Image (cartoon, rainbow, N blue to C red; front, top):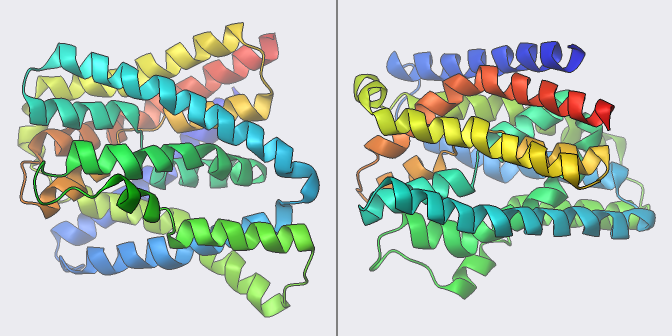
Length: 316
């Protein structure tokens, strides 16, 4: 029950931050354009600082092969999850646009904002491994998820090469620089180390505030009335993690690797399915409902899944 209690407490804390972001936006204390500024700070400063600081302190030559295992496992997970999401979505609707939204939501959980926040708070020693594990998921998002599922079929889609070029973002650059510093053992001035740590510590609170700001744009009544939203949330939060637990019961892997898998798969539906289509003037009501309901339900589902995971690992 220790992991369940600590996870439940952390989820309550994250939910409070989401509510604060929601409240500030609804009360217009944060202007609409403020979300864009905060998002730029998160993606260009806080996340890269956390990645750079984490890798510079923990990455070494001995861990190159070790990191490769996490990358390959992440690649295997998304290679299974993506086709499975396509099959499930096709059985739920014939509408092509909705099918794409459902596919994205089932293939990619909020392993970034929410996943990073949960891992950084509960399993800080595993954060570097989790970032390596999630790299293949980001690759799939950039080359398939975002351009082919969330963008309009004409005029808005980026090419495959353009999708790959998006990987050269501040987070990835921070990981590479941190890995180089870790491998070479170059000393980092104390003021820089303190800056990386302090800025990195802002990542989780800012991510949750941004989640609340995004959810504030949702029509709550319409979202609550959409029955499909609840079905998709249950699949995302319960069915998929339980399938992963079943696989882990049969396939022996390390505790740390298994934990990375569960952390990535047990998170709620991601927010890209709201943010990206809205930028092109597309209907985001279904995606917004999925994001709202799944984030609320995840406050209970994530602690339960983590508790079951802990029981499974101890039994093995």
